[in-house]
Each structure stands twice: as C-alpha cells, then as structure tokens.
Length: 268
Image (cartoon, rainbow, N blue to C red; front, top):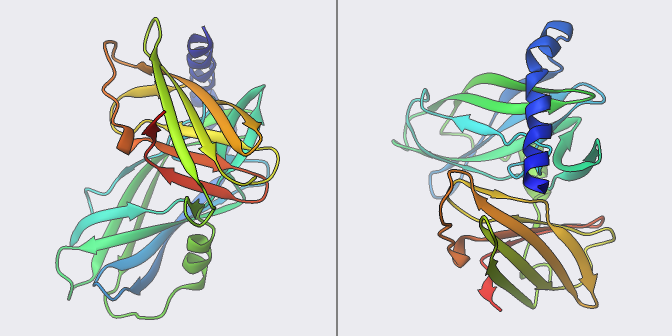
C-alpha cells in the first residue's frame, strides 16, 4: 500500500509538469566547470547547478517523493568513462513525504577517463532531473565544455565539493554493518544494522540495492544504543524475483553532523 501511494503521489507531481512549465520560467541554470589533470591521467571536472530560492533538485537516491537524475554522455568526444562524486545531500519533508537532495548551488564533481591522454575532452552532457518548489517539474539540461589535459592546479569550487562527500565507513568509525533479508508477499524486506557513533540527531538511512530495476521504500530508521537500525521493502518494478548482491548494497547514513557512505552489507 505504501508503495502504491508513493507511486500515485509521484504520478500526480509529474502530471502537473506540462502546465507548470507554461506558468514558470525554469528556475535552474547549469554549466560545466573544467578542472585539472590527475597523476594517473584522468581529469577532474564538474557540473554546477544553480537553483532559484525555494527550489531544490534531487540526489542519486531521491526518496519516495523524488525524481532520480539521469545522465547521457554519449555525445562527448575523447571520453572513455565518467565517475560521479555526490556531495552530502539534505533531507527534505515534501507534503509529508521525505526526499533527499539539494538547494541553492550544487557542484557535482566528475572524474573523467579520456580515451587519449594527450588530447582534450569535449564533454557534452544531457541530464534529466527533477526540480521542485510547490510543484515538481521534470526537466532536461544540456551542458557542454572543453576539459583540457594540461592544467595541474585544482579548481577551488570542485575541491570544495569533493570535501563535502560523506565519510567512508572507516573514517566514521563504523564497527559493523549487517543485513537481514526476508521474503514478503511482493518482494523482500531488508533490515540493516549499522554499529557506529552518532552522526547527529536526527539520523536517516538510505538503502540502495545495487544494479537492477528495484524499488526501495523509505527506510524506517531508529537508533538502539550504539547501532542504527533501518528497515525497507524492496520490489522488482518489472515483477518477478529479486537477485540481490550483498556486496553491491550501499547504505548512506545522513546525520545532522555528517554523513557516511557504506559499501556492502554482510549477512546477519
């Protein structure tokens, strides 16, 4: 029932998009920030998104009320691969539903692998994202920029965004991460238990199951002494069983003081 209500709520938000775009000038601007060359030949660059006051956009795992961003790099030249480093997001309450994302200015660092190290990269990105205020608008951005291969000095805005990433499990003092998985009528339920110091009250956990078309409900999170416990339901959006790789499970703890990025979840 919760999943159906979430899907219905998102459908209502999307249904208003056409009329909303007629009434509002899109309250977002975007640009490519060229960066620097790293010792292994890869390049650092970034996408900078600037939102009008009162508007927000979403993190890679946006929550039940959010619209996940999608990227298309296929029109770029001399580009082998792109790695995205997301800064720590905020938790928003949206009409009684939780969403995870950003407001004001967002700088998304990119680690770019060129096909040929001695040539510049022409980065041409197409980004599908949601932007929200009182209404939510699915929107598409097109960005382009030249990423040179001869700049050794870090760009301050990109370096600052990299410093805003969540801590790793070891940096945050995570002592154990265990997951129990049990079947439900239409999928699986996962209970994640993370033993770690407090990240600052309130604490929220976001569970990402890894590859596959898997819908994950907003985690019910509570702390029991030195352990945070979070429970989510998982459903294959195409129907059928779920193939879950524990090593691909990603757990993010979002606290008022800091965030933690945890990769993999052992049986428990």
